[in-house]
Image (cartoon, rainbow, N blue to C red):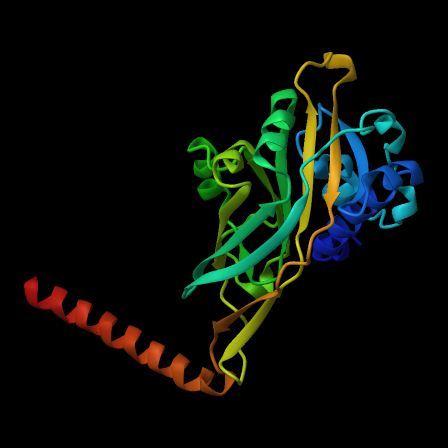
Length: 289
């Protein structure tokens, strides 16, 4: 059961996140308007959205895949989203760029709010864009590399969930997900636009007769997370708004892989090369002595 829950980590995590965003009360949804799907809240003590779902991340609890058992906190949001002019996401784009085994997902966001409206909102609230990207099997992110992005203030914060082993091939690895927090303040000086990059790396794919393995990325979750700048620690809440923008483009990565028909030839060639090199070393050592 533990292995099965771990292998299906990606689907559990994103089903939980989608559930978390859809359980808001009808009144909150009505206030949200056409540009907002739903509101929900979580305590400020939770750093990541995924913290609200320990059942999806903690192995002993990962067997609880019944979404009805996951508690929600929509009642905490009462009064926090009334008559508030929050940023609206008009467009969102995602593109896979680069070559070889190391590429980047480039996100482009365009907000519909005017610069003055956005500045006024950020004067009273701490706000950031949250991107939760479920990585397909065969792709991973380097937590150490992402930590340097946080140190250089490219990201506010970032966390990797799931398989963090960087050395395993695709056949032996499990899926993972990355949660990125990005500051909205730079958008005020960029015509309410944001552009960010997520570095990705490919694992060794399984053998395939076609010579290529195709990896497809699903749609990420895009959230606005904000809270009042002046709050009491005991009553501090993050408000989460699920952006309802145009779905991002699907991204596909075509990875070169070995052909199983060539396994015998490659193995024989590798064995002969290793044998010749070993004999050369032994012969050289005997001549020197």
